[in-house]
Image (cartoon, rainbow, N blue to C red; front, side, top):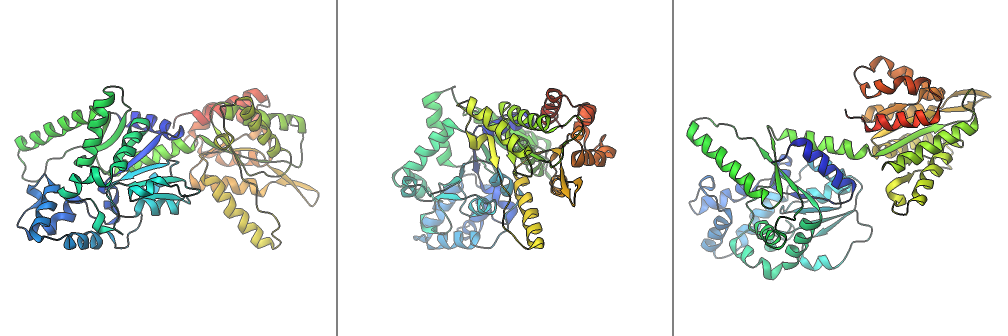
Amino acid sequence: MASTNELIRNYTKAIQEGNAAIFAGAGLSRPSGYVDWKNLLRPLAQEIDLDVEKENDLVSVAQYYRNRRSTRGSINQTIVDAFSKDASTNENVKIVTRLPISTYWTTNYDHLLEEGLRESNRKPDVKITQEQLAFTVPGRDAVVYKMHGDVSFPADAVLTKDDYETYECKRPLFRTALKGDLVSKTFLFIGFSFEDPNLDYVLSQIHSLIGENKRDHYCFFKKLEKTTGETDEEFNYREIKQRLREEDLSRYGIQAVLVDEYSQITDILKTMERAVKRRNVFIAGSADRYDGAWDQAAAERFSYLLAKELVRNGYKVISGFGRGVISSSIINGALSEIYENKYKHMEECLSLRPFPQNIDNPDDKRASRTKYRQTILEEAGVSVFLFGNKMADKDVINATGCLEEFEISKAMGKRIIPVGSTGYAAKAIMDEIRGELDSKYAYLKDDWDVLEKETDIDKLVGAVLRVIGREG
């Protein structure tokens, strides 16, 4: 059994390293209105005088129905009826498809995963037949392996005992691919009951081949609650059975995480998403004017070193390429660290998002830039604000773009770090959040004085890094 903290820590690390995978079961789709395996088979079981509540082997139930009817037509229609209706993407699907995960496995027939990826502006490469494993969709962001088929092809969906018994002949490459991913990636099983014969077969094969030298994977179990009319003896029996099931899964490296309510899974996924995004740091800053301790050389040096140290410490720097030399210094600092370390790839460490140009209409330009800022900040988990001034009719004013980025960051719940000692918009932001320092911005408290007053570049860079890395 694993703790929630262990899951968040280890799975977040796997996501950041590109080694994470999702295995989605029917429970992931249920909040969107789709049925689970038991409820899919319930009407079929009733037609052959069986009660699915009394049956543990649902594969056999499907086969019994197939035997009685002598054709598969009714089963195909049942699948189409259950999974063709319009359904909205639920919160858990939205989160797991927003996360930078490139591998998704599912036994579900619905289209929620691929639709969720598209809604997140990510291109899915969906594998329904094993022939599709042989080619790659250009520009794909993630692969969705539908190892039991798809509602669009109900006649080929895996459901009956016959389907499972012939799986090795008809779809052997799915098992091979799944074995490889289970060996090389860290899986999070969501909404999965672990009653599927295919997965049991694959896990047993891996166990026999590599023994104890397997990766850790994670799944969710809901803590049992006593039902109405259930005796203490019956409840204790269920608890014993669940503990034994958890221990058995651990043989395959699958660590169970207990939750009191299924809603906690959403909270855990949100925490993971925040942790992943916190590695992406948006630096907002522009300057047409330099004064006091911050002459142009000092401002450039600070921006350069901040970006360089962020990349060195494993963060990704995001820049909107704003006014003045600040953005250029940020980019140069990040590139310096990337080029000095041959193992750091540019796309993993730096994201350049220049604003759209050549928009003549002022209203269109303003709306376009607002939308673009929202898109840029969606990628980030942290927003750092430096300087922020511009010339307007020969006067120096706080940069409106920088202030808008603060408002967007605040609305999106980003970790906001204003370096107030650089003045202008950064100072205005610091003054605005001062009243909520003990509550909403408590993560700034230990470094508040440094960020507000210090002009020593090394001390300021250290303070920003500490605030980003601080728990809470």
